[in-house]
Image 1 (cartoon, rainbow, N blue to C red):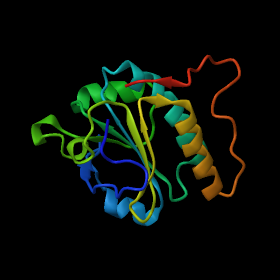
Image 2 (image 1 turned 90 degrees about the vertical axis):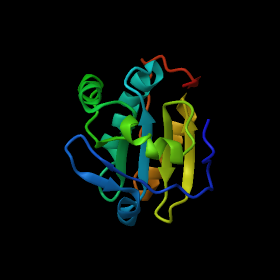
Image 3 (image 1 turned 180 degrees about the horizontal axis):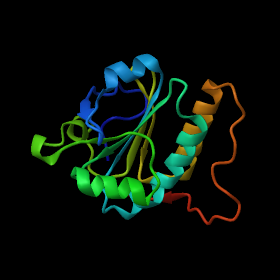
Image 4 (image 1 turned 120 degrees about the vertical axis):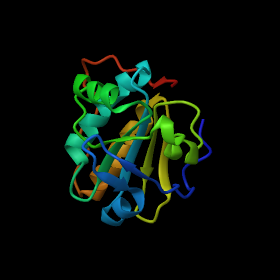
Amino acid sequence: MTHIVAGNMAPGFSLKALDGKEHALEQLIEQGPVVAAFFKVSCPVCQFTFPFLERIYKRYGGDNVNFLGISQDEAGATKDFAKEFGTTFPILLDEKEKGYPASNAYGLSSVPTIFLIETDGTVKISCMGFDKKDLESIASVLAERKKTMPSALFRPDESVPAHKPG
């Protein structure tokens, strides 16, 4: 669960990415909406979800839309996760040694938890676990921002459940 739901203000954070670059939510939302996906490398639902997030990123990321993976694990394991699941958007480290500042600010008790944060700092979509409709909604909102028709996120040959709890 999270205490941050659609309509709430997203708590600010500033975390380092795997490449050492600092990313601050306050600066990113000035450029456009942010998709922030909190995860743990050992979480099977996170492993299932991230390839679909990558699809959304490839189609609708860039052009003033930022995607962030926010890992609750150390850098080495997180790099391995990104490589294994084909994640190319920036991955930030919400470090245990620092008390998981971003995860705690969002009141997370399970992962994956994904937020679509608008440029005014409000949460438009809050998704816990894997939720097919929520991911389709995120893709649809981003397609609308890009003034393009949304394309199918899930292929007909894929067996994708409606929901998988985190």
